[in-house]
Image (tube, rainbow, N blue to C red; front, side, top):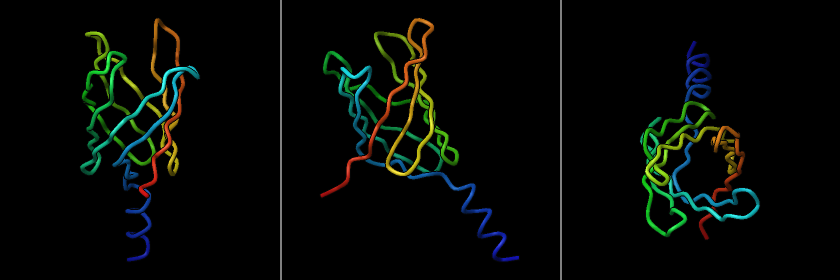
Amino acid sequence: MLIMLFMVSMVTSATDVTGRWTGTIMDQFEVVYNFTQDGEKIGGSTIGPDGTKIEITNGVIKGDDISFTINVMGGEMPIKGKVTGDTMKLTFSMEGNEMPFELKKEVKK
């Protein structure tokens, strides 16, 4: 019985995404996200195209599913995806088109 409880808790625990994640959108725009995490709640920030700090809001991670929102040019942009190890595969919608991108977690040196 104890083993079953342990296995269930392992399956339902959220992946830890705390830290700095980097990637490229459309093979052109470098992005950096700094995530904070408290249980299943995700926060943090990124830098906008104009160099201003953008807060991450409505962030949730359940298992390997992640979703959050950033405010871009006055509009809310939902981002969702999956986390596998040190990789996030994410998508956002732009003018009705799904735009995929990938982030990699930076390893502390």
